[in-house]
Every structure is written in C-alpha cells, then in structure tokens.
Length: 424
Image (tube, rainbow, N blue to C red; front, side):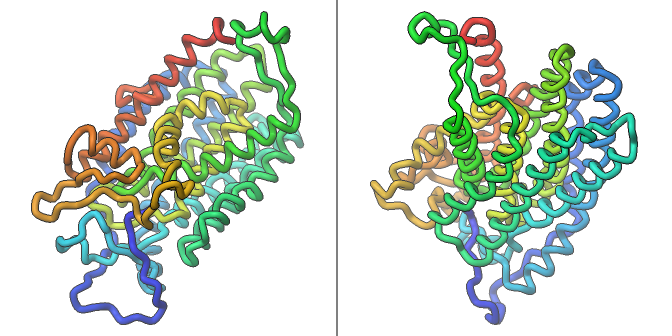
C-alpha cells in the first residue's frame, strides 16, 4: 500500500498548478545520523566484547556500509530527476487539499537503495576474499549462501521496480516471491527439525521433530510474508523505511549477542556473521533514504524498497537460523496482517488505498474503518498529525527491540529470554 498516485501517461504535460519536488541535500540527515549514532552505542559496546577476527570483519563491513550511506544520500536527488523525467512521480494523498498535496513527488527511490546495497555487499565480499585473515567465505557452502542471498534480493528489487512501473496484480505479487525464494531454499543446508517445547514432550514423546519438506515450505512462506508485510504496513511518510530501520537494528543486536554467546559453536557464529554482513548495509542505506522520506517526504520509496527490504530480512532470518525471533520482531506486521485479512481476502470491500482520512483544516489524520494498524491507532488514540502517528507506530515497533528507543522488539527479546530454558 502506498500514499502516492501514479501518473499513468508517459507523455502528459505538467499542469500549471502542479509543482515538482526534487529533493536536495536537506537538514534531516545529520539529525538521523546523530540519533542513529546514539542508539548504536549498545551495539558498539557488544561488538567490542567479541573475538578479534569477527570484530575486524564486522568493522570493515561497517565502513563499507557507511560509504553506502554517503553514496545513497548523494544519489537520491540525481535519481529523482531522472524518475521525474520518466513520469514516475505521485501525489501525497495524505496532504490532499493543501499546497503540499499538489507537489509531484518522485517515486520508486527504493531502486537507489537496492542498487547501492548490492554494490556494497559485492565489493565487501570481493575485498574479504583478498584478505586471508578476513576471508569468511572460503568455504564453498558459505559462498553459495551469499550468492543465493544476493540472487533472491536482486530478483525482488527487479520485481519491485517492475511493479512500480506496471502495477503488477497482487496475486502475481504473492507468487513471484516464492520463485525468488528458490535459490534460498536450494542453498539452505541447516536443520529441518524443530525443538519440541518442554511442556509438550511428555505428550509427544519426542524432543526433536524433523519436518523435512514442511520446514522448507515454512521458510518459503516466511519469505513471502516478510516481503509483503512491510508493503502493507504503510501509508504515511517514513513508516516503511522507519520500521525497516528498527527491525534491522534489532537483528544486529540479536546477531552480536549470539556471536558472543556461542564461542563453542563456530558454525552458529558464522551464520550470525553472515546476517550482520547483509543487515549493516541495509541499515545504513535505509537511514539515507529515511532522511528524504521522513515527513514531509520529498521522495516515495515505492514497492521496490518494501520488497527489497522484506526479502533481505527474510534471507538473513532463514540462512542465519533465527526465523522464530524474526517473527517476534515482525509482531506489529503480524497484527496488521490479521486485521487486514478480511479486506485482503475480499470478505469486505477493499479500496485501492486504505489510508486514514486527512482534514485539510486541522491538518490531522483521522482513522477510517479500513483494517490497518494505522487506522486502528487513530481510532484508539484519536486524530493526530502525520509525523506524530509515524512516531507512535515506530515506538510500537521498537517495543518488540532491544534499545533505548524501544516496545514490539524489546518485548520480543523479553519473551525469548523467558522461554529459553523452560519452553525449549
């Protein structure tokens, strides 16, 4: 779901009352970078506690990620001008009736983030292979996993951009992530068994249950869910990118904790290191996009970004072997999917844009009866401005994350900590 309306014509003349928003280097990115530096302090503290070789690899990847942040920051205005020329722009429906609602905003800027992400990861892997003490992909199995991950992510970037241009039917959107997940499943060499919860062992009679192909089906469905979950939990400036940043930060904390706690299991450490190598560039490039997409947004991320971000998170969760905790991080998205299900299934009418209603006089958003978490928050908490609503929703996401700005990610870690040793 998006907050823009595409210009379908390829040769239409620009109306006299329609201005164009071409993003310039704004004052938002220093604030976002400063806040990020503060909230990353726990991550940096945990990083200093782990093994030297792992630490050097993560720091080098972090340096490449920062370069990716700078490149993304500088490339978005350039790409915006090209997208405007090709009539890939939209209008912010949450500002309809105000001068900002008549501004043509460039769309599909997720393509910049996706391309920079791929370049950063590929260059990092190339440099790592040249440095013997940092070459963690000398193992052919690990190299296959990296290549399959990049293949799946690249496929979803392509699908997202095609969707932004051609408006792919939603039924096709559900099928194509299954195709994109195939390289992932072929490269997966982990377990297909689940640990039976301790309270159920007397009744089941087993401590481990091998699901076989059913486990791989579950991973495939997880990839489809993550890809579409961010896409439908949207509708206001900064929400798509903001939730990705929060989830990515939670994943980084989880990975660094598991590496430090698994000194006797090198394979487990390698799996979480793989995850960090992909999530740090995702976090950095998404921060650059957020500086342009925060209210008032001067760019739209498009389906390109939501598909790319969702697949990247699914990839690291599957190949990093922590899909259970990943679903806890996606708690708000799961709730949003549940409340959206009647409309998505066609049980009740589903409009093209399930957006809140904007009052141009008060400049506040009001909840509608559409089944989204955005509208539910407005119905429960009352009307509020768009940036305030985004902060509330991101705070809800943070509750499931281990950080000072955190309620769904912190809650997830609490649940995980309580269940370890008793439930499993």
